[in-house]
Image 1 (cartoon, rainbow, N blue to C red):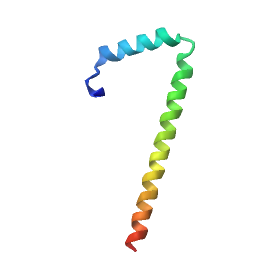
Image 2 (cartoon, rainbow, N blue to C red):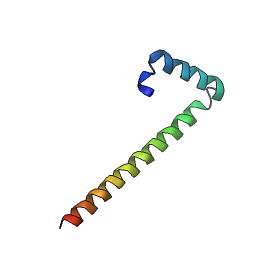
Image 3 (cartoon, rainbow, N blue to C red):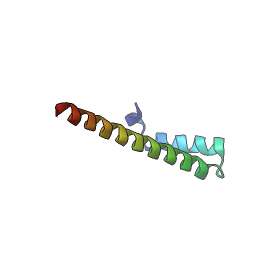
Image 4 (cartoon, rainbow, N blue to C red):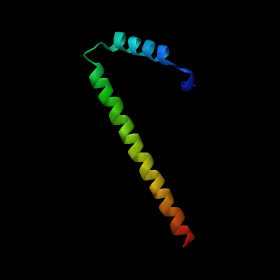
Length: 60
């Protein structure tokens, strides 16, 4: 679904977000999205490592 969004589509989304939130809120919004993605990646890595540990423990 998202692979069909090209450069013009991304620019349109950026303009709409800029109109809705205004230029003063964009850095704050970007930081929040960045923190959320970082936490998600960290949690996913922990989940994968826990699953690998469980699998190796069961093989022994």
